[in-house]
Image (tube, rainbow, N blue to C red; front, side, top):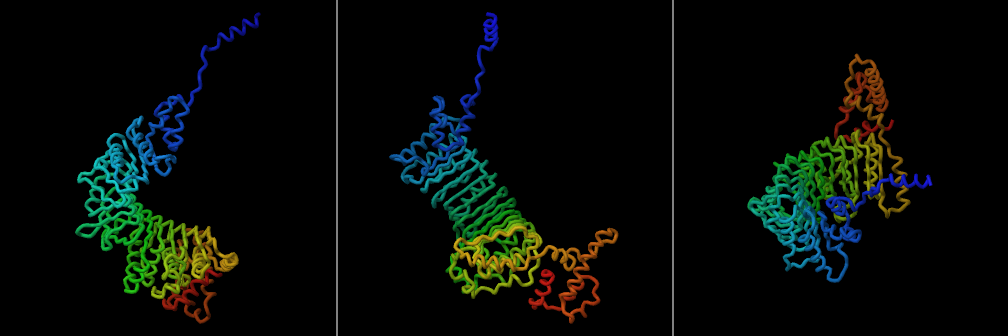
Length: 550
């Protein structure tokens, strides 16, 4: 009896209600909408079966990606898709749509539905991101260019000229992408740019930019940071006036990039540039026959010299082709800040020489990526087809050491003569190279691959010890340090003695008479260099390469 009474008292002392664990159903409505917004459309709709109160919660999603291609297959798919978009835009149950992406690949050109969608989105919803791709020329409503909440806008107009209001104002727009738009006159385009005071990124893809009286295209914007011009069309005689003092990323793909010379100074702030030029082979060969192709190389040198602050640079195969046309007069200001260089080249002597020249112009380069292109330009690809090109310099003749490059990657390697010479040049001059990754093409014969690897092992490899001695001969340590620091002065004397010994042992007896009175390795080297004219490249190469082989 006593035990039963104790158990009753224990049960009575327990709380009458047990605290229930918090589940996902107890989350606030706004937080549930935010979580479901990350789900794909089909999965978001399926959440309605989890609870009675969740039947319409997916309709409160603030972020939408409505693509006709991913819409479920059903009868009357086009009609059902458009009705679904109507329901999302007109009957939205949440606080409003913030992001909307519509891709309609089966739109009826006689319908005004798309214009009504855009007008309703900008007038009834706190829209921040809009991406419209109707796959049909649809004129955007004027209200779109007065939206004060838009931050990102992408319009695919399909060769349609947008009606830009004179007082267009998008005060918060930062990212603007225009595809297949037509601007008859630079004033309409400039009105749109001027109406976006906080614009930081501009992408023009497959647009037609035609100027008015002065035949020039102008892009003036102080806050612009990123600019991409991809396969745009404009008058060949037009100049691109680019005034963006804060521009840091610049990408260009296509033909006929002609920057105004007075605007080259605005490219000095660029930290990353990607240039993928394209050219019609027949037109290029015709210009070459008329002696006009040499201008391409000079303009390319002038353009590259303006990227003084660039840390990353990507150059396509036609950029290298333009440089090969100026092999006789290649002049580029040193790109002292460049750390990464990505090149697409053709496997011929002209392109390999231009690639080596670019590497020499980047004294602080760390990473080099080279992709060898397929034969896509008949008449220019092989050495036998380049008889009208300037004779390129031999990349193995008298090249200085590279003290910075640590990683090199070569893709689509075929082990041709010029490719092997390029590999030999890298092993010969890159002193601190830590990683060399060569990827052969998939269709190369295994015997040819093994033969190329075996030959590469015979190439002379540059030694950091030789580079250290070179500083005493003709580098940063030609002047002896102060004797106050005895240890530093002792190490310098040892290094200078080794350099002097090497110089005196690699030359013939007939030259010892000229250097017997020199007391430093620097003076010895200058004396020997004065005995060989600059035009005698063979003997100079002998002098410069001998220390490396010891």
